[in-house]
Image (cartoon, rainbow, N blue to C red; front, side, top):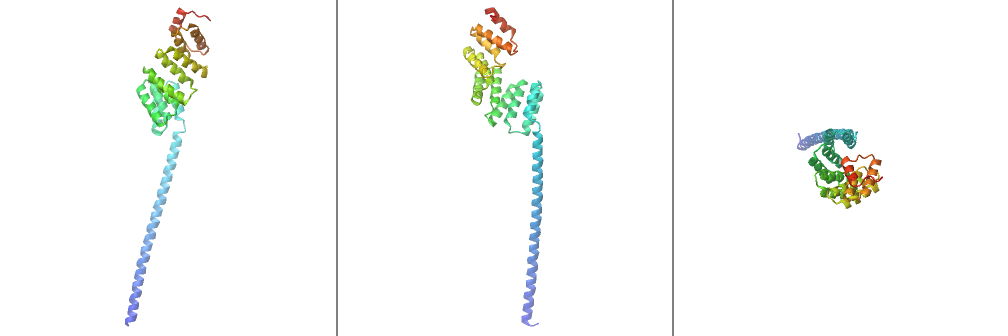
Length: 248
């Protein structure tokens, strides 16, 4: 074979070989790319499916309003059940402050005031604008013999909701605990101004007026209590009758 032809033949063989290597490599790259694309598509489908499932679970979790359920259980006097339900709801919805508030209320009603306060603190840390948290927190402190601390919570309620009749009523009750009868009457009357049918007012108002020796006004409060079908303790009525018989 002539040298030139031999050289040309060698060049052709090399070119064919390199071409074979190139196309083989390209094929493998394409194959790898196709596999990667397939894997990514599969992962995307799985992620989408998981997100859909989580969304459905969340919808099922909120299908029944947890707050409504807890309130109803408390209204039925099923405090322990309310506590368990609230605990489960909080597990599913850990960032919902109102669930913690009603969990705390349920704990207080079941006699676990310390644990209840812990839930009020948790709720207020998540959202300091829910007035009911501070209202029941104050009530719990008053029940624990801490009226001064309770008043701070009622003041917070008024900051958030200036027309909250119950906040004034409980504030008045706390002042009465501190024997600040005149100031108590002021708050209690304000509670009645906001909501004349507030049944939390009359008994404490009668006591405060009695302690101020404003017996005629105390009897007016008795009349108001009767209009609202509020049961007046017999011992309180007896004390009032002994010093100032019913003028009505």
